Amino acid sequence: MRKYKDDYEMVRTKDESGRETLKPVYRGDYFEVSLDEKGLRKFKSNSLLLLAVILVLHSTAGFINNQGMYQFYISLPYVFSFLALFYLGWGILRIPKEQRLHRREDVDLSFKRMKTASNFLLILFSIGVMAEIAFLLFTSLRERRVLEYLYLSLEALSAIAIFILIRVQKPIRVQTSPD
Image (cartoon, rainbow, N blue to C red):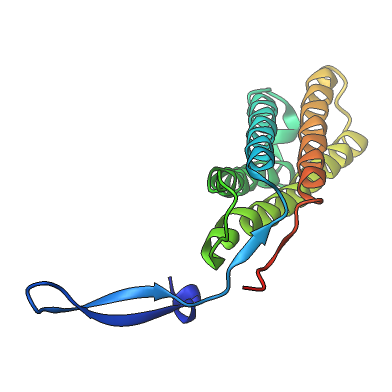
């Protein structure tokens, strides 16, 4: 990727047959994570568990036949949140399993992506929950309000799970290695 091109240097090497080949050698900064191997595994499994809870709650909320989902200001945050959920899941899966010095792309594609996606998800879910509350306040639905409350409660629980995921990420420090 172009973003990481300054971290690599192309070095010419000769093989046994005398041909010159270009080989990329990493020259960028290395990063340390404040967790040991056991902590990394626990963090990854807890994050995957929270992601599964969020996916189940959010998908279940989408199958409810409520009138609020016909409003664009409720359905758009719902739909866009799946993109952020994808990036969050991809970042969680890229979390390394072993304690070592990590390259910049390892840190960016796992820890930073996870932090960015979870913050964006919390914003989208907050918009969706507030939009559903506004829909409940300003419409005169009498007969199918139970479905609206069910949708609202599932989305609110998903937002709480995202907040917990953000809180789990807080104590993890990623810093440049002095070596």
